[in-house]
Image (cartoon, rainbow, N blue to C red; front, side, top):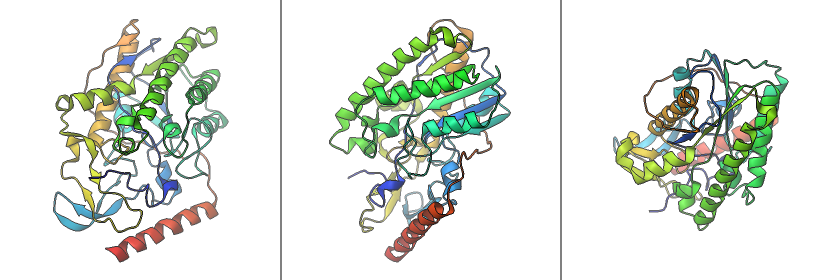
Length: 368
């Protein structure tokens, strides 16, 4: 049965983000404690708290989809991205924030953000560099009780951007980290990338092995870059926390029972090749908590919880040990927080997007 991203065929411009995950963690320096007052987040769809949905007037990601819900075996419109996140409920930032004790979260992440200025979901949405600039223009004064999270790069290597030189994304990440440190950020967590070649979307493509090799090169280069920054005299006031996303996805795939998964190869939202609108119905699995992937690129809420636990354990270990290799443990806690939309988008752009998605809905209704 072919597996593909649910919007790739419908309109390529709407879809491209990051799948992520991790278990082991590197901590080049130690933070003061595993608790913070404020959290600032920069990244793509994995960390997007609803920014893309806000700009698109709630149309993307779609809160409902037409098809068959396996839990009821009925055809109709079933809940899909109900929390405006690119998953079936909350994402890892939602779960991480209360574990850190933060009182304020400002999240600049947008679906489709690359490490540069390009956005592969919609051209007027920001990349990582615009997100960093928006924070700098806010003139927010960082304190030792703030944690900055930077996680981007997957979109660089997907089909729309098709980056083949890891030096460019890693260089962009280094620039982002330097800009934050220069602005006074003292605690910066930087995550590496999951093996995109093992996601349902990329596995179905002929270049899966090449993508996996690029991810390996990216992560190796990122590790050496962060290690170099950690020993840079200009970073003596900043703690860099290196979060290994790569390992958890690999471990979840090789030992799914350890995490309570029964399916780590297929997306919960399946049969989603909508290029002709003739491949309906869409099929939604009955047990998403047993799936690693919600759609062909993004993890389920359950996987996000595991990711948040690993991130918290990484941060905690970096505050307690000088050993650069920190083990992780797991616990789960929920949260909610505010959304920060960086830059206003023109009414014309939103109108064009809205018209396109409304037309899509009408077409889907007609087919249904």
